[in-house]
Length: 390
Ligand code: DHB
Image (cartoon, rainbow, N blue to C red; front, side, top):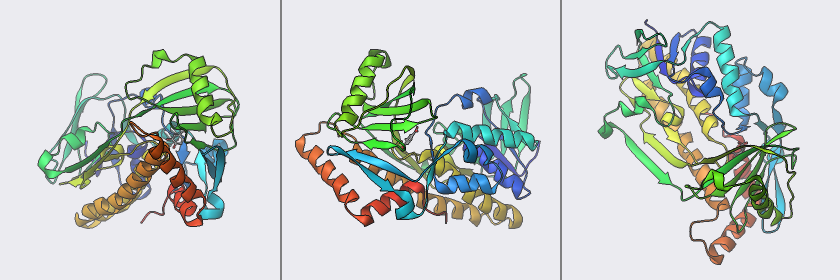
């Protein structure tokens, strides 16, 4: 097979890129070692930035996000004994949508399938070759065991944080930046009514808690825990009393119900620079991961491929591969700002390792400084709802 753009990774980043390229009349092939089911079962965050939704609607994949998603005009910060509302509409003139990011994958996979796109899930033994040459390629074995090669003009690694594409780059050619966090999130899904009309980002002496949602009857919540916390040590009762204690400190009470899923999510910040090597570029988690506070991961991946579709079109039209450097530059500008925002939200809201009274009081003062300042709240609202793509 030959194609213009070979894409490794059929998650939201890879599929959105393939979709955007198709709209520009550019053909692509997408391969992923996971099955479609496996990707659909990956539980991810639930918030879409205003421009992520705009991108879906401008390109004809918004039917479900607009009908089933929930538009949120703001969010709550809870600390120091009470809830504080941040009004995104008033401060930034924008909203976010609560819509499980896995559903974005489903919508994109359906749209690509309906368009007859070449997307191959469940392939094995994927490798990339001649990355710096004129005709890079992807080799893989399909489900029946037959070997394939896709030759392309440009290769895209949209293959997640363990990215085989990134690993194919000689280490000296990329700079990697990392930040570890000494905590993790304990995430639950439960059958209960909503506990608040919007999300609650909750600071407490016992640690962070995030009260999110999925539907009228299913809710998603998280609380800060140790990275090697044992899921089995947490009964439903113990989880509810921990969550109630954390939000109770700020005068709120949660609606409880049976817990249908429990897991520990570890995280760290990661960035590679540049997001290009030869005729291969990296997009989404393959190039960067952020801590989850603020739900930037998938939004950032969509922002990457929006810029990438445009720069790849230029590169293909006039063989100008300067355009790929421009992609890396423009994408990294947003990546680092998102990295900062996610780090800031994380460090402001989580109980630091070995925290004392000073640390906790300083954090509450920081939160108070944000909500008492229109400038502070506006920064949060602009970053949370998403900066314009440049
Ligand atoms: C969700 C996850 C996040 O990390 C966040 O900041 C907001 C919402 C979620 O899963 O709903």
